[in-house]
Length: 164
Image (cartoon, rainbow, N blue to C red; front, side, top):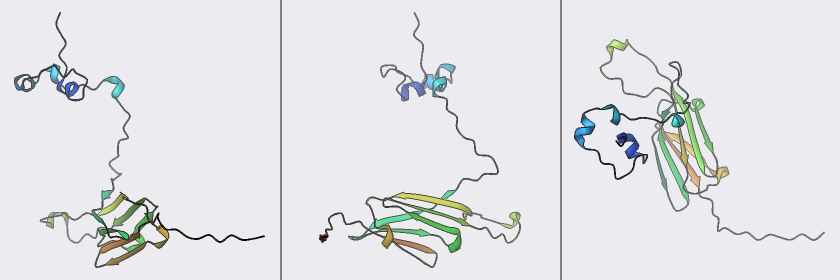
């Protein structure tokens, strides 16, 4: 009784037993037994982006902390303030914006075209909760700096008791 060979994909994902061995010669032969197979139950409906839709670019950021604040810095040169949206919760910050492309010359006139133009977004999960009411954002020379005061969970206040 011949044992059915499983694909390398099955072996790597744990669908095949670890005792099954595959040689490089078997893999290089390109036999149908080694073509990755996705079981019918694993097929998923994945939304397909149309040609007109363009995915947001991801904004590069630096995130660091001081003893009292979490600081986020991002280069947003070329973005007008009205085209930038900063949303803050106690444990997350989302930056969204759009950098409008200003075309000078024809496409054939460019030697390099590496700058990112269009929509971008970035969601940052914060390592600690912050005081959203006291957050500050400043922009200077195209550098956005967001200062988020850390939530002091150890802070105590005395509560006065009222007598009615």
